[in-house]
Length: 422
Image 1 (cartoon, rainbow, N blue to C red):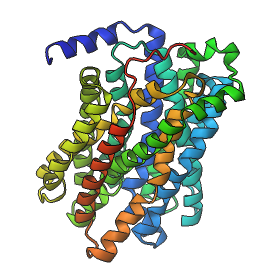
Image 2 (image 1 turned 180 degrees about the vertical axis):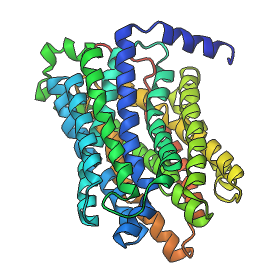
Image 3 (image 1 turned 180 degrees about the horizontal axis):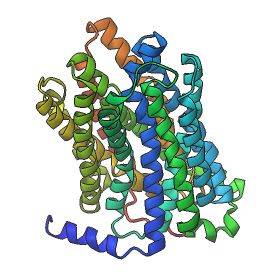
Image 4 (image 1 turned 90 degrees about the horizontal axis):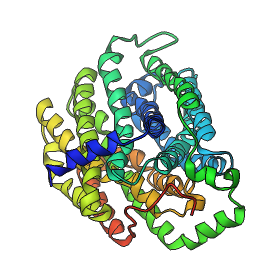
């Protein structure tokens, strides 16, 4: 098995046409840069709290508002993508999330920052569904599991870039003045707007969208697709809620745990996070490719359950080296399961609503999990003397079991033709 997989992946990559490659690169970079803009706040929670003279829990409300507003963006940009096409909608989306991220750097109060993070959440919520539809309606079925894992791990590439910036840039920034250290970090979020020029010049519209009478799917067809999909749609919302808790529950407050619970400097926290995100990327690509052999559902169940034995090393170690190893292995499993999701959701979605359903289920899951960071911080403060350690550990146990259960209940259509409108 191991000897044939790399050759199959290499063949799938080699067989891509230039336009297929460009479409995938654009969607991958869009998701990576979107995630980079999101994770900047997770690394700067302590700095923002100190600047505004509030608690970390109060600042973590910004994570809640970003996650809570993502379903609005998934629906809004999904409808635009069904009406006007994937390509122009993706361009608009990239500009929006870059603008709101940059504006966050100039927030004069915590309230205004929370409003801007909510607006950023709308933009962030639209990128994944539109980008995944464009990618998988353009790519061939061959190697789809690998490309799914690679596309999803754009999220962790964004986290890795944010961690690297926190490690290499943040310690050298000033903590006082008009543009304090965390504000400069948010200014870096304007860079994704440059991606629009690449999309405009190098990416073609989705073949499936072009096939649908200039891209206009009747409202009746969209409504019918959603009604026929209602049962699976409900299960997938539960699945994506568990998945959102899996990802955010192991990532969002982990830098704060390393800083406050273990006393590490921002540079050390950044290094550990970089190592963890390398594990996430390798896990997503590796298990995404493996799902072509074992199937989507059983690969998700296998990797999610394998996260549980990683808890002691990940949360109870004391040295930076051991915590980095724990972070690496934990994210191999968490994102190994996540890497299958882009292909899995797109294969399960009706063609008439493919730009809407995967992104909407994904972001509704984020909505229902959006209180996780404040809840985790609150539980640590009220029941564990401020320690995040037990809260992080129990989060993994509960959500890993939930992911496995809802994955078992959901269907599977591995290998479904996504390039056609029918």
